[in-house]
Amino acid sequence: MALIDIFQQAKHQLKSILDSSAERENETEIIDNICKGINFKGSNLWVLIFAIFIASLGLNVNSTAVIIGAMLISPLMGPIMGIGLGVGINDFELIKKAFRNLAIATIFGILTSTLYFLISPLNEARSELLARTTPTIYDVLIAFFGGMAGIVASSSRLKGNVIPGVAIATALMPPLCTAGFGIASGNLTYFFGAFYLYMINSVFIAFATTLGVKLMHFPKKTFVDKERGRKVQQIVYTIIFITMVPSIYITYRMIQTNIFETNAMRFISNEINFPNTLLVNKYIAEDSISVTLIGKEVPEEYLLMLHQKLPLYKLTGTKLSVWQGFGEKKDRQQEELNNLVLQDFYKHNQTKALRQEAEINLLRTQLRQYADYDSLSIKIAPEIRILFPKIKSIALSRIIRNRMEDLVADTVHIAILSYRQRPTNEEEQQFHDWLATRAGVDKWQILPEK
Image (cartoon, rainbow, N blue to C red; front, side):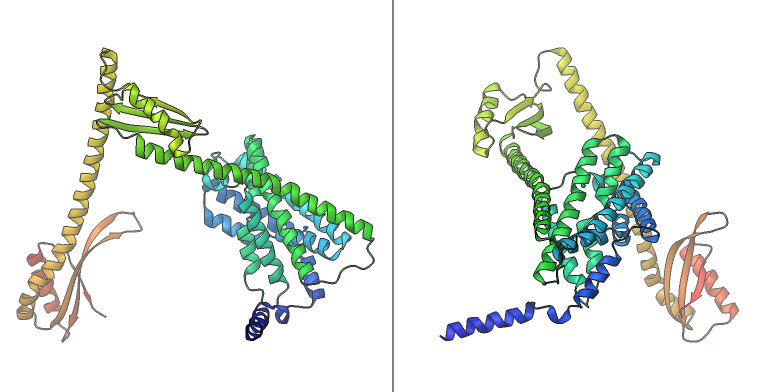
């Protein structure tokens, strides 16, 4: 009986901790706030266009910070949450309005990004852009949980910065821009991959909003035809299913590829390791491994053993190609090619070593210069105490100064002094002349310590 009481008490306490009803706004206000962000015309549309330009620039120059900035100012979340809200409360007019505005935003977004990439001189697909061309089930989960966070934050009086965070996490802007890049470059694979990611984000943010609205028991439209409502629900869940299935397949393929590459790398590391033979290149593709060796040629019986070991690494059916041709060959042409390769390796390493040695010598020189000033101030301190008793402390330094009028750099030597008693101008000049002679540097700037 005591255990039941403890369980009930823990259940009650957990429920009170998770209960957010005390922080929730009035349902009417929540609905009004979401509806205000649905419309895409006037300033809202211009903000979207400028955000698309910013995101396209970020993708073009591979700048994560710029892309995040574009996502923060993007108003795309509004109509997506509007669709989810409409489905959740059976408001079909709201669904149509939100869907119409999302379509407008999507069309303008793709047209704007296409225009940018058509006129941009940078046509290379960078890593930030390529990351938006192959969506997976993880993108589904990110969009869903992001949408849940969005509706919970929208329904709370303590909104904080959740909505901007959801916009960043779900990344609605970059896929639209990548779709535009696909059109501008004529690469339909990029277009469909990116647009599919955009669809995933939109569908599952809307679905999460619908689920959140239902769980929080928002009031539904009572005058809606039940048959019509059932059809809408069927359409919604069909869209969700159709959107999710390809991402599950892509994720499965991605995981399989990752497992294959891991096993292949383990096989290469453990088995392709021969004395007097160097592995210079490896290429791992779907169901095939290709390696290039130089040095002493590996006998055929060893290569046969390699093929037999593939199943031990779960690589059954994998094609293994071993390229050799730079080892002990009787053919003169092969020997000459071997010498050329080795010479090229030697020259490359020699040039690299000389460059590194020059950099090390430069760093040593700079370090020695700084150390000289440290040791100099220690050496002359006893002399200063006798010759210039008014000086309390001294610090010596060497800096590079750039003149703005002619952009010429020169070296400035600085002595920073603190005094027991302020010296006369004549005493300052005497100290300057003595320091110039003692340090072997003509010009010093004497600065009093503040």
